[in-house]
Each structure stands twice: as structure tokens, then as C-alpha cells.
Length: 420
Length: 68
Image 1 (cartoon, rainbow over the protein chains, first blue to last red):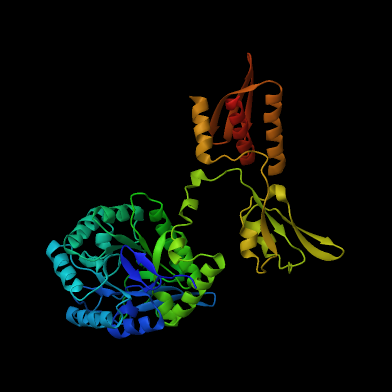
Image 2: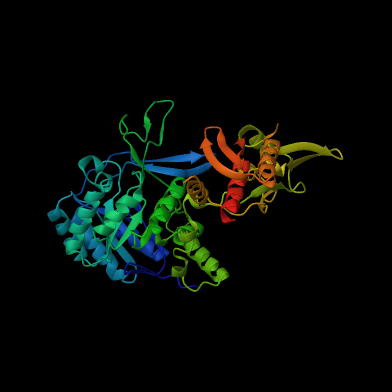
């Protein structure tokens, strides 16, 4: 069994699976049940001046039979009094001293407000703080959440205010509702952040009811933009983690969040630079017990790879994530169809003919329909393999180029030097 | 002419120029692809290369020439 313990900026937990700040971490009852189920940590649903929530709050986007491919909410931070939350954190920490409890915090961008809440929360024994500069709805309209998180100067200043009094590690949670997340990640680091977490939810409208013409969700016939999460956002989150992980100015650990639903997702985030992961939508969809499969799967994966500690995964793929201009223009792959496995649905032919490079030919051999790739016209786009419904029917295979490797940047440099 | 045949033709023309002793004198990338001027003493050949693959091939040939 591999060692699944992680240490994220000094915050230790028995495994890398934390519940993200959200409805699953709203109360001591829930967090304690989650720890009993096996979660290594929990980021307590955002504390601040208690707000009022609306009804209804959630919506899901299902796609082609897949329920909750995406998830949307218009719920704000905690609506419970701070003292109640603090008492429950204290009680939970006593029962689970080795599990990570991180308090998510959100207050107005005023120094005294940050000082007050940080001191109160740390007094009950949390292992760390997560500053919520990410929520896109409701609080943002009052100058908090992503309204702060979209302005690097405010991220830096508020992180600094929290750090002025904090004794535990400070994680800054970033909003994806920004052109370049590395700008705010760098600002967090300048402000003294011990770690960053990403991503918070993405601005969204889940849908419109075609009968009532109401938004989904709606509150008495009116809707508002919400935050999008779930499996649909994973590629967006993974890219943002990768961009920060390869940025030398973001030289702090990353807690990965965004559509993580199973151990494979977690391993991908860790390979791409996250020290641990936070999960929400999958737990809301399937319950706390999904962590059992996550732990078993990650353990088996690490054992199979001969890796002793999950921390050894962190960042192993970061060097492989580069800029387009550093890719080899002369690297070639082509599609290869295995006609013994192919079921002749012709989806590859249609896709290639209509929307790619018209390089898959239909022909008949001994009365049997066959498909063949004209390699000289294949650009290796992968589309045929993507649309193929049968595993193993189409493979993408490497073809050695007749010309040496050259990237776009090398090519442009060559032309510049030549024309000089 | 199919793109592949056009590519092969363009690559052949690049090779022919080089094999005849022409060297690449200047190159200008434009909206149609790439205009290459080959020179051999006072003699000049202009080649408009349209296809992506031939433009990649040309870059390799230019690199060879610059390393010579």
C-alpha cells in the first residue's frame, strides 16, 4: 500500500482527497460523517457575515444520458452564525485531530474585517485558511468573492491582510472568471500566500425551461447567473492548474479543484502540479462514500507503478506542458483502421469527409465493406478515433518524418536570422 | 491537383533549385504562403510555395543551408 499522506504548505492530511468548500461542508455533522467515510480533509463552507439564501439554488446540466455532466448553483456563503460554525469546527477537530480542517473565509475588503475573522477562526484550531476570492455570484455583487478575485491588487492586499495575523497556512482560492489566472495567482504569492487553490466556479446559466420560459434554476420566476462546476469544467481547471504550476512566479503548492470525480482525475491534477485535490460535485451526486473508490484506485495505481508515496506524483507532467510554439511541427501521426475490429458504422468516414481532411476511403474487398486511411493525406487530427464507437478499431500511429524536428519558434528564429 | 500532389510538386521544385546549385537568397511569408527567391550568380528563380507541408520542408532545407 502506498503512502497517501500529503503535506500541502504544512497542512497535513491522511490522503489527498479533501471536500471543497460548498454545501457538503456546511456543518459539523456533515464534515464528521465525511471524515468517517474516509475523506482526508475538508474546507469548511465559507464563513463570513451570515447571508440569506434563496430557494431554489441548484441546477444540473445533463448531456446525452449522463446526469450532472455539469452543475450550477446560486447559493452563497454560509447562512449560519459564525459562533455556531466555530463551535462545530472545534468539536470536529477534537474528534478528528489528524484530518485537515481548513476554514474558507470571505469578508469585505477591509483590513480590520480580515484580522477579526482570521483570529476568531484560528482560535478554534483550524489547520489552515482558504481565502475565497472566487465565488462569482451574489457576494461578488457586494464587492467580495470574484469581484475581489478579478483584481490582482485586491488579491494581493487582502492576502497580505490575512497573513498579517494568520498563524496557520493561508491558501488563496482563485476565480476562473478571468483572462489569465496566473496574474491573480502571482498576486496571491506576492501577498504572502502559502498556497493557491483553483478553480472556483465559472459564471453560468444552466438553462431555460422551454415551457415556462423561466431560467433554470429560478426564484419565483426570476433567475441570476450562477457558478458552474462538475465534470464539464475539469479541462478548464486542469489547464489553469498547469499554467500556474509551470509559472516560476507561482512557487507555492496548488490545491486542485474542478470536476474531480474519481481517482484518475485526482492523479491527473497531481501529475499536473496539484499537491492535493478538492471535490464537491461528485460527492453531491453520489455521496461521501465515493472516497472509498478514490482511495483504493489511487493506491492500486501507485502500487502498480511502484510509487511509494502519492507526493511523488506531484508535478511529474508539468514539464510536458508547454507553449504551442515549442511543439515539433514535423512530428507525424496517422490513423490506422483495424478492419477486423471495425463494425463499418462509417462514422469515421463521415467525420473525416465532412469536417476534416477527406482521407478515409470506403471500398469493398471480397464483397466485404472496408475502410482505409490514405496516410499521405491524413494530418493526424484524431477525429476519426474520437468519433469511433469501438475501442481498438482505430489507432493513431507514429510515422517517422523525413525532415528533422523543428518547432514554430525555431522556424521563426531561423527565418529572422536569415532575413537579417 | 490534390494537396498531396501539390505538396510533392512544390518539394520537388525546391529540391531541383538546390540541386542545380541555386541557394536560398530571401524568403517572404505572405498571405499565399511563402515566396522564396533562389539565386545562382546573377540568375534568379522565384518560387511561391503554397502548401503547409512544403513550407515545413523548406524550413528544413533553409536550416541545412545555414549550417553549411
